[in-house]
Length: 339
Ligand SMILES: NC(=O)c1ccc[n+]([C@@H]2O[C@H](COP(=O)([O-])OP(=O)(O)OC[C@H]3O[C@@H](n4cnc5c(N)ncnc54)[C@H](OP(=O)(O)O)[C@@H]3O)[C@@H](O)[C@H]2O)c1
Image (cartoon, rainbow, N blue to C red; front, top):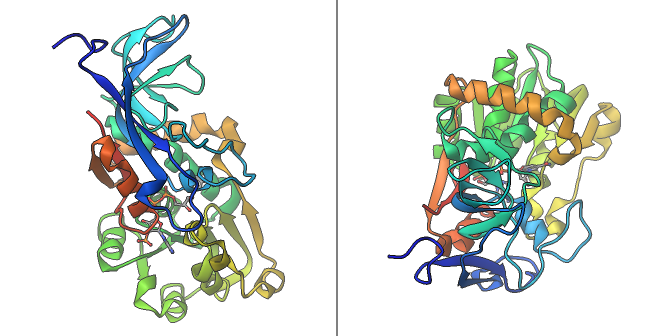
């Protein structure tokens, strides 16, 4: 076996092969192999240990105008990974450093340091930097604190409650002495949210009685709704919000494959209840990342913020795992293990 740059080792990559119209299929991706890259001046090469799969990637596959640049057909799919520097010509990053980089769906990537975060895998596990101590955790922290603004004793409801963002939202709400109510798909996820994460209640929206279940789980109404899904779940929540409630509009995953599913039926509730609803993107608030990550890191390090991961093994399985994420087959933060 030669060194990592030798001819026997290749860099596996997942390219966007075609833009989906509606449901994503494996045929929208193409797996290729190329030579492992070398670092140019002021660059370094990272071997990815874990790739993060996130719902936002569905939007990047479309051709439409959005808050971020789309993925290009024929190019490596966009994404964030954590891994180890294996070659460096950059003064700030040395071989052996662990980093988070936006090198996309590939095993080895080159970076010049933009948007890179150095990581300490002895403080929290490396993979946690893609979840509770990474972008999803920060999203939960910002959406809850900046837009939800919960007060002790209030009721906070969050959808996709067992997932990367939702699981953190409910636990942070509990730490603020709120009543935390989750909404998730299926009994196993709901049991986990209550028994492992410590939410006060969790509603299985797939059981088919969301409206009555919300009334039962939120006897004092809903003060804060952290919306990860939009669609029918948002419509049901709007029937139970209190006057002057806040809605943090974080995601609309129920319509990512089918935007027609996102119709809001009870718009009158916004007026009658004087709801303050705010859409937000975590990157709008870069000034808050440092305090958020500090708190989230301490909580995970001290075992006060729990998380769960769904781990696909090998880059070949990334497309399938991503399609599963869009269909609720993940149970916790979806990752692809590469090393
Ligand atoms: N605004 C921002 O800056 C920002 C940043 C990160 C994430 N987000 C958004 O936050 C949401 C959660 O992201 P995440 O990374 O934490 O993902 P996640 O919750 O770990 O995984 C996605 C979950 O969405 C649920 N889901 C899928 N299809 C659904 C449907 N039709 N109706 C209801 N729920 C459905 C599934 O859970 P169930 O089995 O429980 O249905 C699935 O497990 C997404 O909408 C994402 O786009 C926004």
